Length: 233
Image 1 (tube, rainbow, N blue to C red):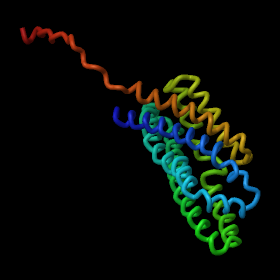
Image 2: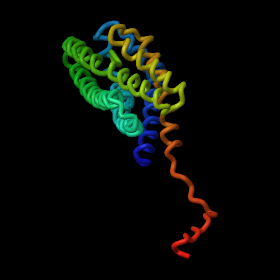
Image 3: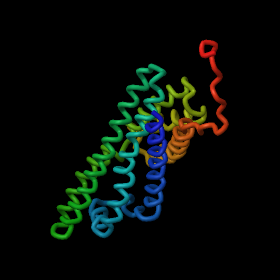
Image 4: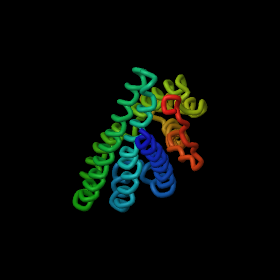
C-alpha cells in the first residue's frame, strides 16, 4: 500500500508539473494559435510549429493522463475505509478522465500531422479537415472539464468528511470540482483557467500528503530487547 501511495504522490506532482509547463507554453508560444480567427490561420500555424505543438500536446494530455492513474488509485485506496459509494463512483470518473485525456492527446497529434501534410497540397481542404477535427478533440478533452470536475468534487466531499487531507485542500478541491462542472454550460476561458490554476495547487498539496503521510518509519537504533514473559521465566 505504501508503494501505491508513493506512486500516487509522485503522479500528483507530475500532473501539477504538466499544468505548469502547458500554461507556460500556452502563454509564450501558442497565443496566436489559440486566438486564430479562422481554421486557415490555425492550419498555417500548425504547419509552421508542428514539433512544438506535438510536445505541448504530449505534455498536457498524454503525460497528464498517465500520471493521473496512480493518483486516482492511491486516493481511492485511502478512501476505501470510508465505505463511501460516492468515493468509488468518483474514482471511476477519474480513471475515465485519464483515458479520455490520453485518447484526446493521441487523436490531436494525428490531427496535427494530417493537416500539416494536407496543407502542402490543398490548404483549403486542410482548413476544412482541421475545423472538424478541432471540434472533436475540443469536445473530448479541451472544451469542458466535466470528468475532472466530478472526480475532484466527489473525492473532496468524502475527504472532507473523513478528514483525509487538510481542510483547505478539500475545500479547494470542492471549488475546483464545481468550476469543472460549470464548463459544461459555460465554455468560458476564465472558468477553464481557474480550474487549471486551482488544480496545480491541489495536485501539489495532495501529492505531498500522499508521499509524506505514508513514508516508511525509520527503524530505531536504540531498540530495547524484548522482556521475557512470565511463561518464558
